[in-house]
Length: 463
Ligand SMILES: [Zn+2]
Image (tube, rainbow, N blue to C red):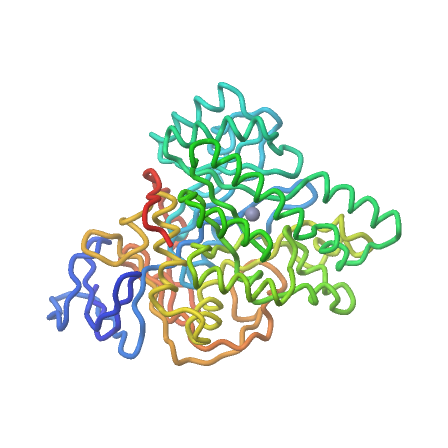
């Protein structure tokens, strides 16, 4: 394949050039490449040619007990591909109490294989820590699982002692730990009190998950990671300014292996959504909840100054009808999560690049390069250079449209981003040299995505 006439953008540079892919791998980037016979030509005139998006926070097919995320690895990756994403790293559901990490990894291989249409990997999930788990974490490095997730809330949350032992191990091995930070007891008490008082509408979901709950957990994690000799720590779905302040201060104090992810919902939506009429507020029930417009602005600033390094989605869709509606009389009964894997790249481009908040190189860095580095995919993924996979997103920066549920491929009955005006949209997505999506149409093949064994994270010079 030869991609002609585009502007090639990476985290480092922006140049007018053509790009050649052979057998799925980028072989040449230079001006005025001469087409070879039988070469597929893509004309990217007026467009931006960038590394495909990498979404390191999805929950395909997630079983949460009361419901199951409605995108499986086929529909979810079709949606991702149509939105410009070429790799996902999925966060797994907990297995039975006390199970090994491998128990869930084995299960997820069967969920994804033969279905995913783009490349994928998994973060391990850790619901308890003992000698067997610490040994397994070490063994899994050789199998390409170089990151894990634990929670400070929900049924299989870790104690301080458990995650401290895990952090010391992560530091020794050079692997990444990702964490869902919320103070379990604070949220639990608030929920009980609110429901006792009959405060059961969606806005009380936000009230029961205050920013202090998230910020307390973030600060506790930061301090433990510091004592664990600056163990690699990655805060997922950062939603608030108070949590960001702790992260920024710690990085400024020299805690270099501390990283943070935010998501489009925390950049462009706010808690007023919970007050939408009828049961519409249920659409936005996720944890952490949507915050204030002040928090939105603070997170953009965090992306600009390098305090936040990545944007992922926490894609976890449930139908409003029949599923989110389980919470219509009590917010606490709503399955938590919302869709977003498809519009991530477009939302970030429009609200970020077109709106002048970040430049195109920073866009590439936070949506692709940094996720690739932090999760051991770089330079195979996350950049455009000779030898990298031919995973490419071509964006038309001039197209203007209104985002609606009807144009998306996510298997769910709404989008939280309904009606948002966009400037710039994915024109084409290419996975290892094959066109998988063009102008909103899926052109790929079920099962063509491969499991990617990941290397150790690259932690240096990430901003
Ligand atoms: Zn999540």
